[in-house]
Length: 338
Image 1 (cartoon, rainbow, N blue to C red):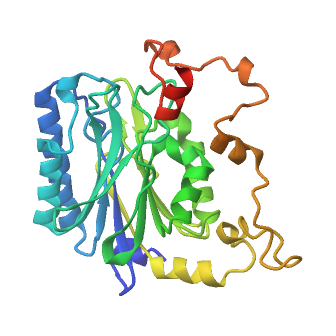
Image 2: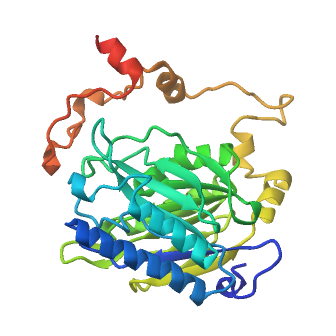
């Protein structure tokens, strides 16, 4: 199914390259500029490596490393030189690219943002991580929802970031909005290896959706990222997997969005993305289309609360050295507090 990693490209295929990028140390604007050039050079490597490649995907933290440094001097903006360099690299190499930035936020903590740029150098997808990896990460919760775009060769494409993929609701939202391919970029280290693998497969199978997933790779002298570039077919089968942990290796495969569309139309058993909203359609016409899930109803009502809520120990970032926050999120929450 992988077409020998994309070497034998078919008319309906989309060839994806996942860059297991060497984990950098970025502390100064000069470090940031150097790492930007490294990523640009890897875009060129991807194009030279495989002429059939449609989309090259860089991991979360590709530009900033894993220090969690929020120094404004090394934060990025959408109109800054780093994003401009990524746009030029995609245009110069006639390839789509997925990139990661830590985005300056004048109203609070920085955003952890992901971008997809097309082969003409135009921004097509802009996403801010909805679920920072608390209590370790200081990033502001995302506020842009989950966009789904027309990607290379017309595929429906979505992007989530790292910890997002541990919530089945995230992949379900991507599929519900039409995504046929979901990218998941990450900076995970080795303790998360098994969770990474089975959630990538579950996210694919539960939604009849291809998932393409990649982490940073190698050591920065403190952390050891694991690479683990992993492309999973819509039936949950792994069709490419970077298991060697070799930094700067590009894991490739061809995927077939047309077969995703075919499965979503013709599967009967385990067409779960359809059956979620049409429970028991054998017994009742069209299936039950209510919402029997208390947690969904409570989230919409703003009353989400676990039975063990008062016993949860870690509810802010103080255990990881961050100050206790005093800002509320969202207009409704602020109004309720006044």
